[in-house]
Length: 196
Image 1 (tube, rainbow, N blue to C red):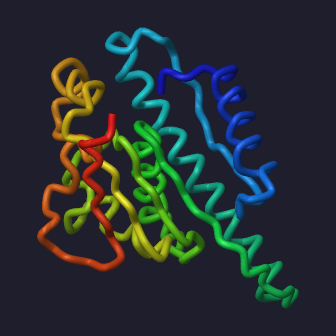
Image 2 (spheres, rainbow, N blue to C red; image 1 turned 135 degrees about the vertical axis):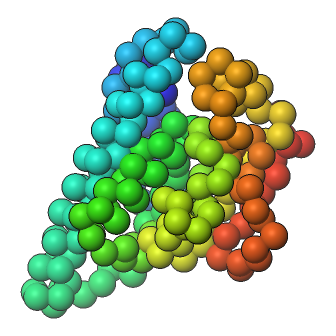
Image 3 (cartoon, rainbow, N blue to C red; image 1 turned 90 degrees about the vertical axis):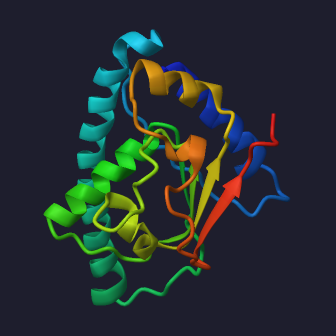
C-alpha cells in the first residue's frame, strides 16, 4: 500500500544486494509479490487499495494452485529430488489482506494447504486482530508453514491513525492477536513496541 513500482524496484534492489549478493547470507533468492496502489493520498484511496489487495489475493490463490500442480508433476510424478532449501514468507502491512483473501479463496476452491513455507512472518499487519479466531481466514495459516511470527507494535502510529480514518477494526499489527491465551509453540507473538 502506498508504494509505487519504482519504490518496489528500489527496495528489491537493496534487499537483493544485502541478502542475495552477500556471501555471508544464507538467502539465495527473494521473490516479491506486489500489486498496484491507486494513490499516495493515504486516507482518500485506502478503500480502493484495500479492494485491489483483496483481488490480488484471489490471484495469489491461483498462483498457489499452479505451484501445487508444478510440485505434483516435478516432485511426485517425475520423482526429482528435493533441494532441501527453505522458503519463508514475509507479509507486511496490507499484504496481510492479500494473504487473507488467498486463504479464503483456497478454502472456497478447496485448494489444499501444503506446508511449503518454513517461517511465516506477519509484520505491521493491517488486518483485523481476530483473524486467527476459529472460522477466520488465518485459523488454518499454520498449515502452510512450520511456524508463524506475528510482530506487533502497540504504538504503531500509522495503524493507529488509519483505525480512525479508514478501518475501524483493531489491527493485528497494533494489538497482536485478539486471543493469545491459546498457547501454540508454532505461533509466536512478538511485541516490538520498544523498537523505534
